Picture 1 (cartoon, one colour):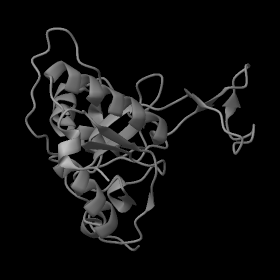
Picture 2: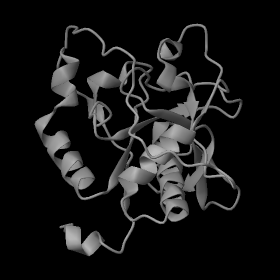
Picture 3: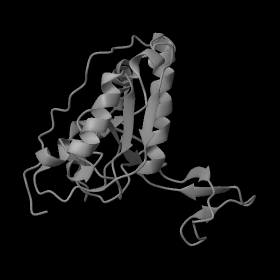
Picture 4: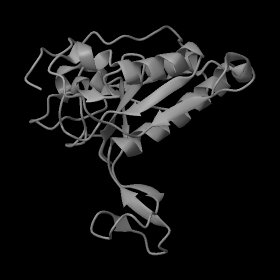
Amino acid sequence: ELKSDALADEAVVVSMSLGGYCYSGDPEDCMNDATYSEAINSLVDLGVAVIVAAGNDDDDACFYLPSAVTAAVTVGATTLEDQVASYSNWGACVDVMAPGDYVASAASSRLDDDEALLLDDGTYYVLSGTSMAAPPVAGAVAQYAQALGVTNTTIAANAMLNAAVSGELAFDENTQAADCETNDLLARTPQSGDALDVAAVASSCPVPESRDP
């Protein structure tokens, strides 16, 4: 159990590569889901940034959990060519994009060879997904915390979002990611000479209308 006094001298970032469909036709219900919202808000209140994967359904992330939770930093995936990945969820609940295609990942016996590309030495799989994109963003937030000299990583997450690069991503003509400007933000690590802006960032993209669950 995390306590505020235990975090006074530690910069902590939580990365969550998990999720599923919300099963509610109202995105507001998903964004305020009792279980995920309570857990994530409790961490954020302690000064812990929570980074979550947007999901791999080529759908609006506001209908998925925990990606819909407002307090989380929700990460979509891009390809090696800086294009929004065809599988990545998108929309107003996505805060930033990051590379998620063909990422070397620790091997597991639960994965069959037809589910991932096994590297020659047998120790890593090459995987793709928003679950691959979220951890690098968590690492970037930790670097911003170091650059700012803060232990409250929610402040560092704001700096990361403010420093994200726009206008660098390409969109497939069939994706709706381009309809939301936050989906055009590519995460990056702090650079020498950056004037780091820690103001809170809010998406101006409209929350989707309700739909059949």
